[in-house]
Each structure stands twice: as structure tokens, then as C-alpha cells.
Length: 312
Image (cartoon, rainbow, N blue to C red; front, side):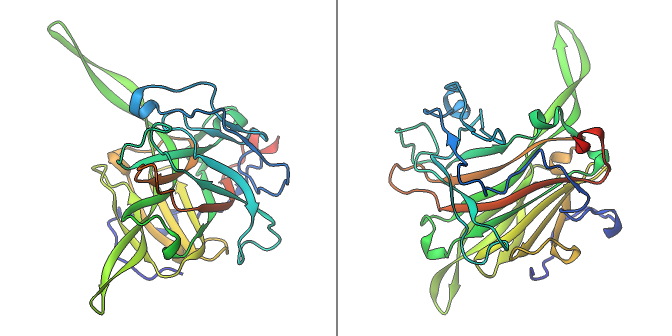
């Protein structure tokens, strides 16, 4: 359980907040990584569209059709099924390891922080996006390794995020005339796991903590410290009022109300649709130091209302 921490959040009744893991699970989406034949086809070299506008088609994808490479930033260098670390979900034999050496352009270290994306195939497997009127919510387990096994760098190392969509008004000017038109805008809220250092008895000691993306202005804000490494359960939910809710719990038990971290309206946008969810792995892209090894298990998607697609 998390220690209590005051966080910036919007005034809202706790009754309006959906705890991630609530409702009907959409089995078409997510994974348990139990199939021993689970595999990822990287189709290297990976995309680095965010750096040099080069997607390097075709994109990498898992053989079960449930995961794919992010076209913007590319996939982690290593994506493979591994034995579930001790303390994981009961009966789980397989989990997913993700790590990268080159998070920027392959074999061209930049000495700048970059990240890779591993994206859950939601939109294609469901035949469309999910409206927030259905209160879509997502959960995952993540194994946080001991701090002495992390890349030796302060800052973000991992994230569990979603791609969501809203509608904004865009100003256009042509000659002397201006007009406004509607435009779909995609943004990516989520929970980041970071490494920091603090003074303990005169020594700099590393610690891990959460940051939340994002507040109304688009800035990340401080989340709770992570008191112990090992397995954690993370969750995000999206409610009909357009707000995003963030949860985390130590261990692998299902999330509860007391695991609530914050509610936000990232960038001042009211969320309208969920497109996908994904993981990030991050490093300093120096060509020497790998990202921290990140292992995840049992990502799931739920909705409160049961549409036709949930019955397929």
C-alpha cells in the first residue's frame, strides 16, 4: 500500500472514480505471456520517426497479434518472454522482459535521453477506439528490480501510459481571414517510474518514485515514493467526465480505492476515447549502458458498459 501523499488533483467525488480492474475484461486485448511459443518479430532496424522522420517499415510485432512497435519511437531492443520473477501472480510461469541499449537511432548513440515504446494492440483488435462513456480502465503488474541493478542515472526509467484522444478547436489563417475548425488531438497520460538520490546520514542514497503525466498545463507532477522494489500493480482509468485517474499498489493484488494517487485533466483536455496503452523503457542512449531490465505481466483492459465487442 502507498503512503499517503498530497497531490494536485481536481475536485471530484471519490464515488466518480473508477478503480482500474473494474468491470468486464476485454479478452481480445492484453496478454498473460503464458504461451511458451510467445515471440516478438522485431523487423529491425526499428523506427526513429521522432528523431529523423524515419519509420523503417515494416514495424515489429508479436506473433500473437497483441503487440506492435511504436511507429514514433520504435520498440525496445530486447522483447522476450522470461520466467516470472518470484512473488508474481499465482500460477504465472511467463512474463515479458523489455530493455534497450540504443533508445535513439540504432548504433548511433546520442548521449541524450530517449525512450522506446511497446504498444498493446487495442484499436485494431476491437475494431475501433473505446469511448470514455464506457469508463475504460487498464492494469498491469511490473517488477521493479533492486536499485543497484538499475542504469546508474537519475530521471525516468519506465512508464505505463495510454494513448487517448480529444477534440480541439484549431485556428487557421488564410490571407486576411481566420477561421476555426475541429481537430482530433492525441495525447499520452500515464505513470512514470524514476530514480533519484537523497541524503541519508550524509550519504547520497538512490530511491525510486512515481511521476504523473500530466497536469492541466502539460507538466508532470510528483507522485509517491516507492518504498520497496519488487512487484507492483499499476492502473489508469478514464471516466465519462473526461478525467484520468492514477493508481499504484505494492504487490500483485488487485487495485483498491486506497491505492488512488491522483485525478487529472492532462493538458487541460477532456478525454473522449482510448486508443491504446503501452510501456516505455528509457535510458541515456550512450551506447554503453542498457536500460534497467523491466519485466511486466498480465496487462488487462476493462470497461463498465458491455458493448457488442465485449461479447465476441
